[in-house]
Image (cartoon, rainbow, N blue to C red; front, side, top):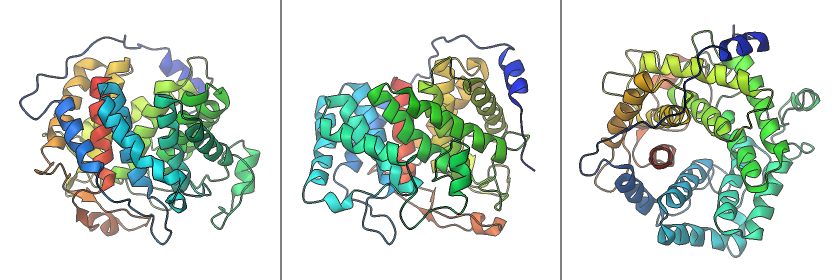
Length: 371
């Protein structure tokens, strides 16, 4: 049964020792290890690649969006105007001849598309990007439509949640990033406040007492990348969630509980596993990147004890980038998967190289190290 941590407990735990925000030196870096070098290599790999289309649909796949977002944030943090221009130019055809590649935001995996135009707007104030991204973020809470309406949409709407809620942990990056980006672009707290409410709903129903998450209520397995989406989603949310948001204490408790579990299960060389708590499970790179992003950001923001998590973050980064090949393609990435109540299903997923599910988290880490 999932843990149901009440708000009172969250407040009591939050009232205990809170780590001060302080600088931490994640280096030194040997040649080829610095976030600047790695970020440029992986961004250069991304720019010429053809669009990855979403399954049977013709729209751009969410994994490409997550990588594109990572490259844009890296370019902004690195103050690389040339890279920014190339990444923005890649988007320009989507306002014209390639418009059909833009997703209709009727599902979490399609609505996360909003993160890219909203990031471009933050960088160059293009009103077309704001209009596109904000419309998508708003439709995530508007009336249900389309062919993929969850059966419990009406019940979730009554709770103030998105009608796209489906209780897969993957959602807590997809929903959170779209809403956080809308808040960052507009300053409208409606977006970030409802993302926080959504996060609490998922925490209460899917986080286990030891801190990890089932993939879904009917898939009781601690899948690496699924947990990575949750770790990265909480991190993105907490980065921008105002201090006076009433859900912030509860989310911070859930985040710290998860980070403690991830620290416990991190391999000796810094990796996360395909099934996190499975010693027989293979080291998987996309989840390693996501966990490392959460560690880096937590240390930098003062949410995590730098004495324990700083070395773990550095170890994770060095382990992660050791899987990049000469062309900056990341190896040992789990192929995408739906939920299944079958442990062997997760252990036997194909391992791929250069998949955007892995390329994106490398860029998130590079950005976080520079931020």
